[in-house]
Length: 465
Image 1 (cartoon, rainbow, N blue to C red):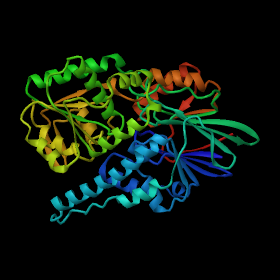
Image 2: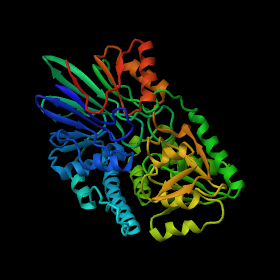
Image 3: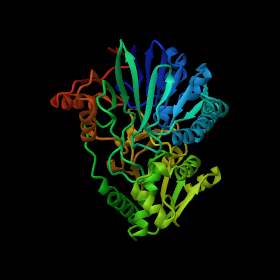
Image 4: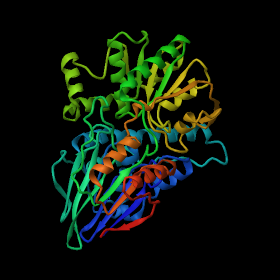
């Protein structure tokens, strides 16, 4: 029996891991790779053959870098079931179709804009909306902490990860050479004390093999308590200079957290009287899914909901769905907050808002989530003097502010605590979903605590004993 690391190995995107056993093979996540355009298109179009041949798939959560290649997988011939929490299933019903529509729309836009260039290679979407619908039909909803058998002789459980709605750690019990082994894939771990969701749960020790995310393996986030004050400061200073606040945000999780924070600030009279636009049809649908799953909320959010009746909206918030209404936002000449996806600025309506606003020094681009290497979001974080948006170079004159307190990923201290609580007797700790500059210091920090870890590269195989 072995684990193969097929994606998100020394990278923070394209999560994909394969457990091969004598009873069959089990894929854990099938995410879309986001990075350099040519590499992304090749890797997302040509999935590993062993992934396509897998007998079943367990999905940790709905973010596209974990779920976005499932339609491609099914289209290529994958015939198994996709196990996920009910909230993840409901989110993917919207997100995978939205991903298809964005691909089709962006391909049409770019082909029209550059089609007359003799060197232009036409862009094709990876999959269509119908492909996404076919993939969604494979989903099987499994409640938290309920054992199930994705393969004969293998028992799995989905454990609260606290990262986004429905996110889960994957706990697997199996027999290896006559001995029982416990394998845990952390998925993307959340942070304790974040608004809306329950805190991450601790997996049952001992864990023999731990695949642990390492996105922020060498960084300590700001205090969760500071997130509202930091957001208030950015909004006020930008509004005072007459600018707009452009917030690229994942439609799942981050958008709802920002809106919830704005709601709290508005109720306390701490915000200037400016409009807030959620320009993402997906965010509208996702927010409705949130309302369907109060079992994922923490006690504070349930109490807020009971007292005020609304968590994700207030009088100055307007959800934008129609393209023509989105385009009208370009004509705004007064301060406003515009929240749009995608979170890493690689596709969707956020590209049009950035194109129209990054050259105005009055404006602020507010980054509230992780930006992977070689994405437009990372280039904004790095404050490159010029950035390419929809094929055209733009001067970056807008302010760029990063608020790490909004991060939904565990930081270094959280990861050390997590590993120390469950993997002190492990046979192997493998860091995934992280870049080397974050993983190497984390490996050293774990070693100081007597925990041996490594960061496999893509294609690495580890035998289970």
